[in-house]
Length: 177
Image 1 (cartoon, rainbow, N blue to C red):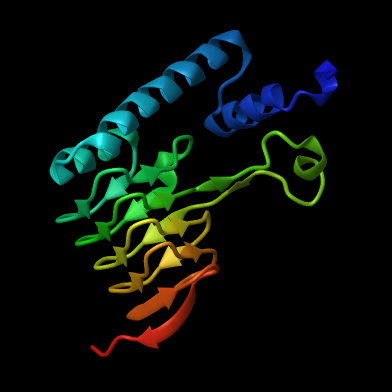
Image 2: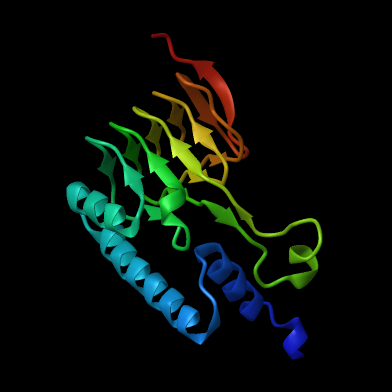
């Protein structure tokens, strides 16, 4: 593989540009920022204490409302945690994943073609329940008091007061108020 075929310096450069870092000192600052975020995430990921997990995620920059419950093994975007907004009274089930970015990082053909890095906010409104194993993709809003069923993949917005199921997740029921 030639140096031109190596996508990893390009990926690091993209993230550094997003955070406004440049040069060797910027690269060091980025690596320290990522290491701090990774350590806090690792602690939050495996703790059985929901309150402690929420506190660790907040320290990473995730915006989290009051009275939220995080089960163990929740993964919230490692690179852009500050783009994840979680309202009040939200429940995240074990092994659920929330991504504020998508990136075909090792495939320059896709990355330079029709599938560049996508970085967008994720908004989970108050009262939402994300069941175990569900995946929420960048740019998605999950409506107030909506339920995402286990192992669903949410690739588009889910309205308020709905139950969404499947891959890709689709609304199967409106919840009566």
